[in-house]
Length: 428
Ligand code: NAP
Ligand code: HSE
Image 1 (cartoon, helix red, strand yellow):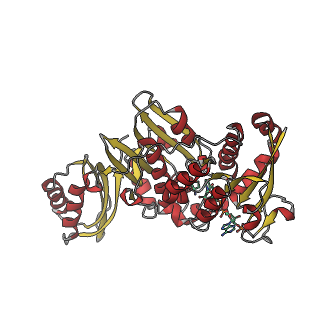
Image 2 (cartoon, helix red, strand yellow):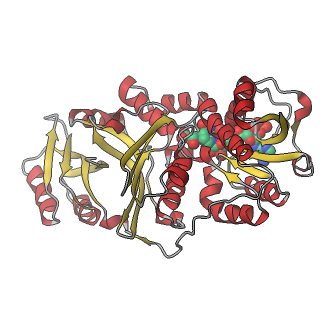
Image 3 (tube, protein in one colour):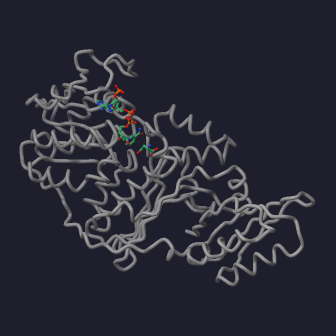
């Protein structure tokens, strides 16, 4: 059996998962790869920090040179997060002719082109399966099994933390803060959970999926992004009453060469399979012109599911023959991409208002909506006799521009105290 030395950059949630898998599944990994994998160095920030796994002290270092100047280390696994110094270290690994694995969607979505280009030039392999969908083999799926297709659509739940929060708020009545704390304790959340709850993480993942699916270099500014922090328990309750479940969706569509890319909370029919993707699970629908509809479902975050994808990438490198130059797929991406603006997107909308309980208010709102080409499919009015009562509308499909014009006009209506929330409804 051959031996190979690997370095980990980071021993947090994912690094710990990788360490556990390499130790627990040693035999399986040896059989599948033909190698004994030895972790030779682990770069961390704080060597004295208490770890969740027992790691020999001499393996830990806070000096990156001990990794990059060690010629025996053949594979570097970046599990630190953030753009810098992760990007610098990844480039150093490539330039030192070390193969590279990463779970870092932020760096791949922002610097992927440079990394893939440098890896190809240096003749090293670079895999990043864990960067999208945790343990779900979505990237290998798109890059290998689905390459015969023109992919038309990629839609899914691709952030475990927000899905965990929305599930706990919806099924167990937990508050946002308590649910977020739970996701952090379970190791699903990013070091700064703003990335999860404000949907930056899902945006990075959608950029990676879209670039691989549609063969385009994605400009992150072209992705519409909206997080889940404005979702209140009352919206979840109204959604249930209307037959919907609220999920953070990532939507990528290739509409005849024009890309529609958006990440936002959406009400989806409670009968749809995505509505039953709960807790840290992710699910990704792909529509290809040969395969038709395909859905991949599995754990999208957490130490072992993510570690599974990372160790799988290490084994791919070993199976591809570590001593041969790779055929990294740079997949000739188009840089002249057209994007459809959000204002042109057609959706149904849930609108929750606080209004003064006065005669004629409903008629006035319906007139504003009608004038702007927005028709209604449901109305819920509750409460009576109080100064402000909630009024909930669900519209038929309309362009976002029509809705925005209506909302602007409503803001000037004295009878409307507040536009409490607007959530897109996707009748998938
Ligand atoms: P984490 O728990 O915060 O761990 C980060 C690790 O990197 C820690 O061990 C930290 O050292 C080390 N580190 C950070 N900055 C460093 C620096 N400047 N120099 C040296 N070491 C440094 O993060 P994680 O949850 O494992 O996530 C790691 C990566 O995987 C991120 O890119 C994340 O987006 C991605 N990812 C995470 C999951 C998940 O479920 N958590 C799933 C898929 C992908 P110390 O321990 O000494 O602080
Ligand atoms: N914070 C990320 C999530 C980790 O919750 O989905 C997995 O990429």
